[in-house]
Structures are given as C-alpha cells and as structure tokens.
Image (cartoon, rainbow, N blue to C red):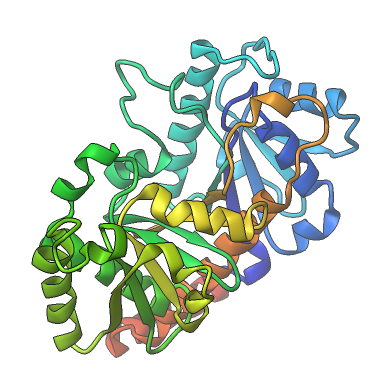
Length: 356
C-alpha cells in the first residue's frame, strides 16, 4: 500500500474555456498540498503554461508523456495532446469540449489501470461534450460505464451528505424511474459507502418523499404509499437504520437533517437545492458505489467569470482532500475486512517487494 503522502491524484482539466484551469492552479500554488498527494493534471503543458501566464502563477510543472515519469513533490502534467489550443474564456465551443473528453478518457484509463489512485474532475459543459463517441449527460454516467459497481451521486461536506434516487432525469419521468429495486439499490450503495468510505459503523439514513407532503395519504399522488414506504419497510426489516419518507419542504429548514448520517432525495433539485444552499463553495460531488474514487467540486464551468482571476478554489480543494480521505478510509476498511489468507499473502508480497 502506498504511504498516504504518495497518494496519486489524477485531475481531468474540464472545459478549457471555464474556470477549471484557474481553480487547479490556485489549489496547487499552495506547496503544502504536495505534502498530501502527488497531482497529475491530464491536459497539455502548453495549455497549463497558458493558464500560468494568464493568471501570473508561479507554479512549476513537470511535463510528462508517460505516467512512469511522474515525480513526487511536483505538479505533474500528463500530455493528452501536443497541438496548441485556442482558449477563449467564457465561450462555449464544441472543439474545446472535445479536449475535455480527451482529458477525462485518459484520466479514467489511468484510474482503471491503477496508475493513479483517485480522480478529481474539473467542471465540464454538458452540451459541448456531446459527440458520436461521447453521449453521456455528465461525468457520473460515463464513469458508471467504465468502472465497476453501481454509481450514485453523493454530495458531501463534513456535516452533510445527500444522495439521489434519480439524478439527471427530466422531472416528468422521475416517478416512473423510482422502483422498489432502485430504492433498495441506492440505499444499499449509500449505506455501504458510509461504512467503507466514511468509517460510520451504524449509519442512520433519512429518505425524502417523492410527492409534496409525501402524498398526503394519496391526495397528492400514490407513489409514496405504493412504492416508497413498502420498499423502506423491507429494508428496515433487514436491519438497516433507514427512516422516512419525510416531507422535503420542511426537512432541512427544521434542522432535522442534522440527526442523520446521510439523506436520500428522490430527485436532483430536491436534494441539491438545499445542499448547495447550505454548503455552496465547500461541497463536493462524490461518485459513490464504484470500485474507484472520484470527486469533483459542487459547481460548473462558470463561464461568466472565467479568466477573470476571481474563481473560488475552495470546493475543488475540498474535492482533493475528500478523495484522499475516502481513499485512505476505503483502503483501511478493505485491509480490516480482508480474508486472513489473502491478507497474509499481501503482507508476504509486500515484504518480498521491500527486500527487492
């Protein structure tokens, strides 16, 4: 196992015309960050040098064409392309979207191959990334295809964690997507993540209703009574501490959310509006349920302020810290729960490696 300070953090650069380059620079201008990890930015040295000049940064890059060349204690840039790119801050450009995907594909490949330990993704523009080769609404859906496991969008801070039953689904289709199978799958994913990734032994999970006032006994829809409540009852019978459904309109304002380790919302805005209201700029988007760790900041490309030097890097920095901590927690959990024979074999291999 790598020592904590050698955790390799891969970074996909996102939309080059957005604030991704700026927040990456600002995060790693602090030399103390290199005490926690070894960053690898998937972009090109020409693009990163452009950002460095534009934002008057004093950061030094180590340009590499092979991940075997990365240097600990340096900010590494893996060259995904070599040609110069015209970066025009604030402009939505399909060609620029193509470079965002080149970065994401290369970083994901490195993650799958174990060449990086975690992935932190800078924001992309969901419209200009669409092509014949890439037809995903965002990072999460692409990573769900490429990695193992059942993905779940999990918005996290130190004090608040919000998961979603459905994420990028049109409002008119939400109720048809929410089935007993989906509810059980998503709750199990959150439950397992809380144990493995956040070291919570007996997680308490609250679930928000699908309809206003959880349907008011069927007056405002039957989905809560016919689908959600029976599914939650079945899950509770299996010993999980799952509560609800709660009426979403008063749940956060009453501070009830503070009584739980995680909250599961029925759909995107039901969960993300209160989450971002309570924690915007500090929140992290974590893709739970996959066999690899991926995080991102809780905001988008922010074209309206791109290139002005005023973007706030705190959410991106929190995404880096969260990825590192989740990786450590997950590694620790896997070692503690490993088959004793496998664990012994790993120890012997490690000793053999150290002797070599």
